[in-house]
Image (cartoon, rainbow, N blue to C red; front, side):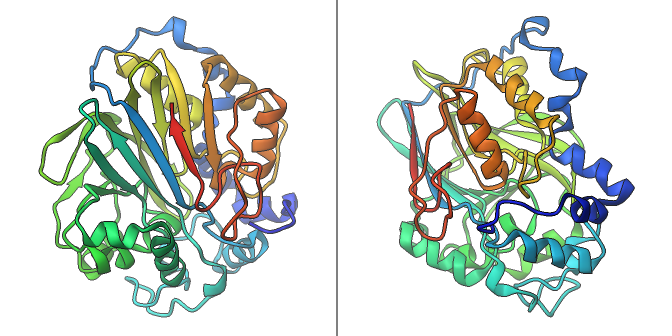
Length: 368
């Protein structure tokens, strides 16, 4: 993000256009600030699916800095035709992508998103999930090495790679992961486009590919490297339209013993309240939302709209005890959370993260 936490509202809306605005609002979690938000938990039946429990969840933020300057990214999108243009036709790095061999547009502005989930089971064993795989290869590789991800991949310590969605900043760093562990098992959404699937092949992937059901909102198991279901953990697929011609986002639920449900997400295009409601109506224990980690996609370009305040207020009704937000949540939104009295975990602003208002690169959060 830029040191200036603002982007011209006029230019931003011009980039959206009429059709794009609808898709963008959907991707921002429009559900969360429409009248539907009033259909809260007491009006719906509680979930009954028992996914088990874990002892502890520790998340390392490998990188939340998907790009370093908002203005550069928005200008690129303007020049390419707006936010509904197929992302695979943008001449962003890396080179050699399907339909786009160039990949030389502002490589210095590309970063990426990735996190490591360390799941301690009730018996003391540990399972590791790599959530997303960054964007720019040099940056992703650097962050992997600084966090020890490269060695963990080489040593077969990470059970699987879980791709939240097909967006460039979460997925295009895949060749870096493949360099260290090409046969790692991978989870992707059920609506990846042909370009994305071709990119997986071109990156040298040799592991088992788990693909969610297409266009179907559903809970699913996540397995370890031995093919066994990880207890206390489950994925959830949300079929939602997102900008840059991407469809669908999958996120993770972790049930922490004596605490409650932790929601882990890449961008949360489905909306944070929609995410919380999915836990409530699906999971046994979903009425105990304990924590959240990831990008919450409320104000990624620091362009605050008063209606987003409704979302901030609505979040308080779920009673999260620990909020580890970053990335596309937006600095303005993180500050709104703090002003509302929510338990936001601050960061250290290291490794090119530019604010302590939320968790940054290299920071760690534990649940509980």
